[in-house]
Length: 224
Image 1 (cartoon, rainbow, N blue to C red):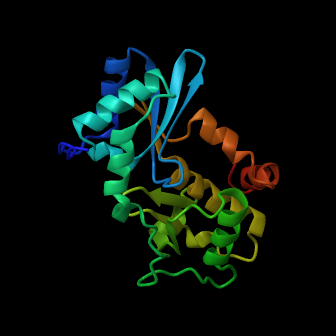
Image 2 (image 1 turned 180 degrees about the vertical axis):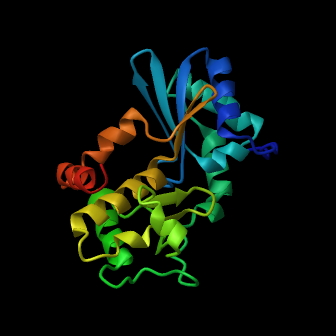
């Protein structure tokens, strides 16, 4: 097969608009770091839900054109897409959790133990994000509603050290970690020019957590 042409990286909005213009279909694009399912598409009403690994943001014209045809007919062969994935295997290798400057052991809870348990139970071990307690300064502690965050650029989850407290039930801390792991798994949905962090699908998957209702009720009582 001939060498794939090079392309400058694009962002989610540009790729979403490009695919919609070329296919003449309504597409809700989600960019993820999921190397198990690199490309998937599902029809939802009159729209298409498309999940795509972020390496495709740097794909060449041949790959994007083949992607357009795949959206139109998912049964077609995709040699350019397969070749592009093979050429970028080195990027897809899962990196181990970083130990330098990371703090997972708290006074009461160990984040890594919680993360590994949730990763196995709900994500089949595919989440590769690192996790750490955040900084414990007074300003950070005052922001009680910022209980956790996920940084898509460095694939890192930070948990507010306010939760490393014996008064905080483990099921609630697990829910906060699970919430951020969902962000790592699902990425950001883009529909036209609008970015959606907590989509309907995200909210639906939140409820899969075994202690979802208990966690939501405990948070409402504490900080409602």
